[in-house]
Each structure stands twice: as C-alpha cells, then as structure tokens.
Length: 468
Image 1 (cartoon, rainbow, N blue to C red):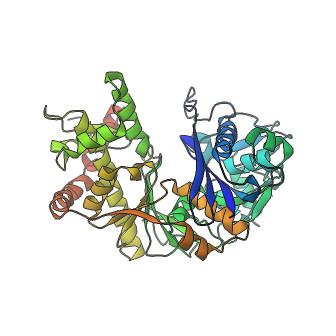
Image 2: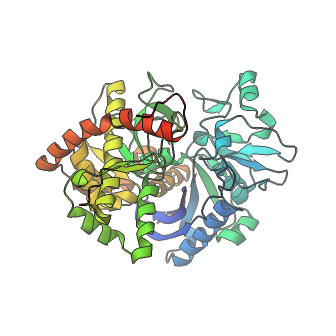
Image 3: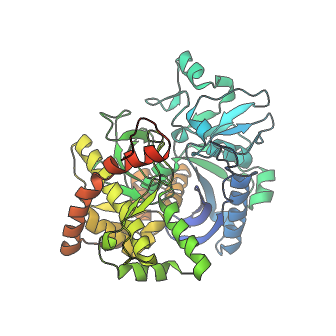
C-alpha cells in the first residue's frame, strides 16, 4: 500500500494527513497558528517562524500516530496559504515575519531591501525549508507577481518586473501541480520526522487545492469553501474572465483554471469569534451551539448579520454589523444569524457568477470546517434552494494535497485519483417551507448595503455623506 503525507497550511492552523491510495486517512495532526501580529496599521504577519514551526510539529505528530510502514510513504504534498509574501536572505531564512494575505503590502509592489535575496510565497519558503531548493508551485502566484497567466511561468515582458518591483533573480523557479519540488533534506528530516530523500510535490494555491479535494474539475461543479476566506469556485479552461462577475485563478491541475466568485473575508473567523466570545459565559461546544440555533426559526426573528468584519479593499469603510435587535433574540439567534449571513451573502455572489458564466449549478459541494455542521449544511441547502453535499474527508485541501502527491509519485493519474480517493459523506435537500422564507430574505438582503454603506461612510468621517 502506498501512502502520502499531505500538508494543508491554512490561515488559522496547519493540518497534516497521512493518506493511502484509496483516500483513507490513517493518521492526522493539527497545530493552531499564533494570532496574527497587527501591531502596526496595515501590517498582518505570522509571528516569528510560526508557519514553518507549525508544519514541522504537525508532521512529527502525524508520523508518530501512523501505524503503517513508513517505508511505504512515497511522497509529500505541500499546500500553503495563498497571497502571502516571504522575504528571504541569502541563506533562505526569513528577513522578517511572513506577510499574511491580509497584509496591505502584498497588494502593492515589493519595496527593495538590501537584506532580501529572494521574494517568494508561503509555499516557496516552506519548499526551501523542506528541500533546500529554490522552486515553487506556479499555481500559488496570483496578485502582484510578474507571472504570465497563460503559460504559468514568469512573464517575458520586462515591464511586469518593474511594475511588481521584483527582479527575476529574486524569484524561485516554477513547477506545475504534481511536479517534484525537491527532496527532504537531513536538516528538515530531523525537524519534521519525514524521511531523508522523500520527494515533495507541488500543489497550487489553497483554494484550488481545496476544490480538487472535493472533485471540482468540470464546469458544472461548484464548491463553496467555508474557510477564513469564504468563496465559491468552479473549473474552467480560460485564463481570463469575461466580466467582473468572477475572477480567474490558477487551478490544481496543469492548464486548468479556477473561476472564483466574490467572497467573505474573515468568514468562518466570525463564527469562531462568536463561539470564543461566549467562552467567558461558560464554554459552549459547537454541538451545543448548533442544537440551540436549530431551534431558532429561519430569519433569526429579524436579526441580520453583515459580515464585513474585515472590509473589502474596494469598500474600506465597511464594518461588520448585527441589525434588528428587539429583545427576542439571544446567543443562539446571533449564532444562526451569522450562519445565515454567510449563506445569504454567498448566494448573491454565486447568482452573479452564474449570470456571468451563463450556467446554473445544480448542487453545491461544501468544504472547510463549517461543512461539519449539519445546521450550516441545511441552511445552505435552503438558501441556495438546491442540494448541498459534504465530502467524507472534511479537510478538502488536505485531500487535494494528497491527490497531487499521488499523481506526482506515479500512483494515479488525475482522473483516477479523484474518482478513487474522494467519497460523499452526506447530502442535504432543501426544505420547501424554509427555502421559501429564505427566498424572500435573499431578495431583501441583496439590497441592504445600499442603506448600510452611507451609515458606515458617515461613521468613518466621510464628509461627502450627509447624516440624517
């Protein structure tokens, strides 16, 4: 039996799975990341060397729990958070803590620092720590990088390097999903427990890896990713979008692209925020929260949640809000309203994407930690008014990472890996009565920011908005 080690480094934690060729998980471990350092305005960084240390610790723990033959582990799949930026010195160590995707600097050209010998992504940095190679996954470059969207390689246009502030000599070489990045060094082996010489295989950006991990490879497939950043995604073959109803990212197979809807920043973070806030009044488990919220009627007795806890870049005045308190609502109403706010917001984004693409998705596959909640799955089925499906392995990015490693090691091709390694856990059908309630609420929710935006601009001190 062949096994792979699948690394899934997300915004809030690192998860490591040991998976066999049929998609069964034989061991797993998780390490929470430290809270972001936000001590300076616009600065959001991973403290110290937190990402690498969490990966090393989670690998050691998963391998310690693995009862199979370590000699049958044939590779490592590496998936890390997208849109991060790592500045490295000559020795490949961090010049400063890694910038999160929420850091304002990652959306601007790189500003040269004499200490910086390489500019790379989170996956490029971890690849170097594991293998000593200056290679990276081509699919993890999106945003302010001089990459050619058609070729998945660095641009031939010298102006792109000037625009992004990154000289070619500062950049790692690029490889496609499933290609080898390098082999585990003795130094990395001592820290992670991975065998010396074990091949490490590229994946892509974490959203694309997640989509692959639930089997999204065709144009009629849709996945809703319930992570710190929530988005809906489907597959496509074109490197650019037709309009602004969606945007195009690299996929997790060579020459396959990911079409992505608008999203919610700090989406499931908001769920965690409310759960943790309640901890001061006696700890409630997720099961208790879901049970209590299930007794609340659809619409949360008029309570509405706006999920701009982290404002989008094009509307920096926006803030998160809970509207509609009238004395009937309690903690479970707030919890359900947050879940409903996620579902209603994403229904609007998916409607826009469907209109742009000229297609309708017949079902919604849901991934991420939020998919483990039956209540969340049912709310999504009712709001979208179509079936929602949960994969057997909740860590979709971990499974996508495992698939890439299996393909890289020559165990499967892409189609076989997806068909053999991914299984459905549960399906939720819309309830006619609840779907009708949410249909009306969806229409109302779609226009709510026409009223809230002037208020938030006023609160932010925008003199062009007149208070009434």
